Length: 339
Ligand code: UT7
Image (cartoon, rainbow, N blue to C red; front, side, top):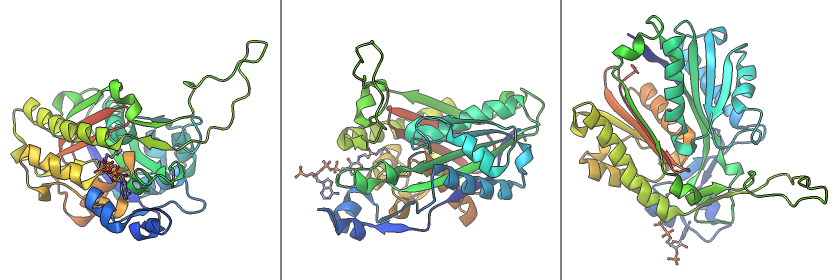
C-alpha cells in the first residue's frame, strides 16, 4: 500500500458570524460580500480557543478515524500563519502536549494558505524513512484575531478552524517513495511578498540605544493587510497552472480528475479556475459559503468534510491545490488515500 492518509479530522468553532452581523458595524452588505466572494458566514474562535486547541481537536478526530494512539505519532507538523505564540514556541509543541504524543517531533511550517500541502510533503518524507511511526499533519488558523475589523476589504474574507490528517507507511524504509503515485509541486514567487503581510518581524529595525544595542521591542500587535486584486489575478493564473502541470507530469489531463480540493479563498477564484481547466464546477469542493478563508486549514477541512460525507472515496484521482502569502503555491495529485 505504501504511504497513506489513514484518517482525517476537522474542527470549526461553534460561534458563527454572518455577513449581516458584520454589516451592523461596517459599511458593507451580505449582497456585496456574497456576490464578490461566495461567503455568507464564518466560524470565529471563542473564549479559550486558540490555534493549538483547534488543531488538537482536529487531530484527535483524525487519530480516532485512523485508529492511531498518541504514542504512535512520531511527528507533528502544524501549518499556520497564526501561531499561539509569535513566533516561538511552535504551536506544534503545544499541540503535542495537548494530545499526549510524548517525544514526537513537532514544528510549525509557515507557507500561508499553501502551508498544508507543504506540510504534507514534509511528513511524507518522514514516514517514508520512519515507517514504524505515524505523522500528524495539521492546518490550523485563528485568523479573526489578526484582522483589522474596520477594513471591509479584508476582514470579511477570513474565518477560524483546523483540519488534520494522519499519515502512515507499511513499506520498509525508503521503499514507498519509489512506488508512489503521488506528485507534488511546491513553489513561490517572492516578488509578490508585499501582497499579503502582517508587520511585526525584525524587518522593522528598532531605534538603537546610545550603546548601539537596539531598544526594547514593543509587543507586536498588527493586523493583516492585503492587495486583494493582485492576489486574485495571481490565484486564478496559478491554481489552474499547478493543477494542469501535475496532470501533464503524469501524462494525463484534468478531465481524468474526480475531484479538486482548491484553497477556499474566493468562490470567483474557484469558478475561474474551473473554467480555465475546462472542468465542471461540481468537481471542485466548495465550503467557503460557511467557512470563509481559513488559510492553511482550508484544504484539510475540505478533505475531512468530503470523506465524512462520502464524496471522497478510495481510489478517486484528486488534486489539492493552494496559493497564499509569500506568494506561495502548492499542489498534490494523488489517488486517495495513497500518497
Ligand atoms: O488566501 C489568500 C488571501 N486571499 C485573498 O487575497 C483574496 C483575493 N482577492 C479577493 O478575493 C478580491 O480581490 C476581494 C474580495 C478582496 C475584493 O474584490 P474585488 O472585486 O477585487 O473588489 P475591489 O477590491 O476591486 O473593490 C471594488 C470596490 C471598491 O470600491 P470603489 O473604490 O470601487 O468605490 C471597494 O472599496 O468595492 C469596495 N469594497 C467593498 N464594498 C462593500 C471592498 N470591500 C467591500 C466590502 N463591502 N466588504
